[in-house]
Image (tube, rainbow, N blue to C red; front, side):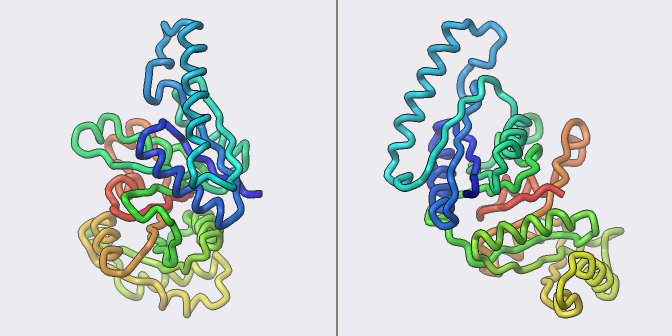
Length: 277
């Protein structure tokens, strides 16, 4: 049985992720593992938290989990709750690998401005660390049944692993894969022949049965940034899910350079699937 991991903070946003996760679990016959990190909402993560406070908080969370699993949309779904006693976003990645999760599902309302630069959203942090594909849910229909997945890439050889993981998820969703290359001005600009060469090399490396035909199926969109290109193209293409590889950049390099995948996951109005390279 496949496993879907869902971080829970008992907010309306995480309830949305859980409902979508339940929809997916029923379709692919998967179980849900729910993880709540102490400190995500309240201060159990503080160093001066007493043993008595920790016990009290554990009981409160246990009660919330008991109420949560009674939600009607979880009927018929196997659910396993876990309380992690410290705030650790890297720990979500370790748990996902330990339980062999096929997917992590989260929902986000996004963050903007200075708060985004300094702190970012919890979803962004999970995207940054997770080696398991992360599906980021937005204000969409909770009956999640995507038919068209738009895979956005520069089609460099380093993205091959992410491509194969994305194909696995698309197969789980029973979704058709479409491709997008965003051509940028300046030093990143590529002529048609240069794009064709990049795409041909890529599809040969992934053992596509017909690489020449494959490059003809790649949508090419010119824009001033990858994020703008993805947003503008997906808005007119009827895409159900945007899929994009991520480096999972952390630390100072993340603050200075940012991450295209995290920005898209945070700002897109449609679901985004991020896949670690």
